[in-house]
Length: 361
Image (tube, rainbow, N blue to C red; front, side, top):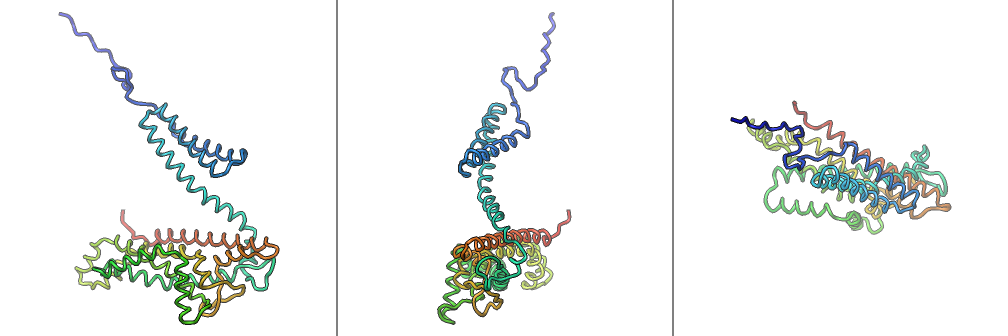
């Protein structure tokens, strides 16, 4: 009786008996990043040394990055993993291409605006200035006053509207308010300025210019943003909190005031801050309603006022002789606006983190 032939022990568990590998190799972790860096260097080289257009060089770099990653992954990892790498490369390239205009704008504004970031620029107005010198003190104060008035008008109206829609609104009236809020979200800013001008022209006559007109125009743009952000934050408050308050016999208005609003405070404050950042750089409605002045005027109910967007616009389109000082002031005012908007966005993130409901982990 013959003994059975022993089966040879397999040493390569990744290769089946048929000889077809079950697994593929894998690119090193730094591989895609190395290809991305090479593609970026190639794009910079085409732009700086071959004198290509920056957009064309960026597109070539993005396409080259995607192709190289796909070919390398296809040869090492197989077709399935290569497709995944290709999609990741396309998404990354699209993100970098979208950042390109933003980076270009920031570099241009910073390089041209820093020339006038001095003490005189922040502490003097343009009264009596024809050439060099002068500053934007009057425009800074005008921007702060008008934006503050617009906030005082918009926040109560927007919050009360959102509270009505979430807590009380039912039927045709709530649907109509929601529809008009959606419409207001998409109206051009110049329409808000024309509305405010027409409203005050009916009362004070044609040619009227006042800071309060600009505040009302900006509030038309702010209100739908405040309504939408507050409405979404109120919807995120769990109904269990409301029901627990009602079970204790607390009336609805007090539940909203003491339970719902504090819970949603972080999101509401963030939405309000972003709404302010949205309107603080508007130019068209302020051109129509507020105009421009070279002197200090801090009374929003009497005469023209200066604002940073309008100041930058007039310094650019109507420079003096020579035009250099006016253009420097225009770029500096634009840089200051960018800094203010960035600071407001950072403040919104800080508010969201500080006032968010604390949870026990």
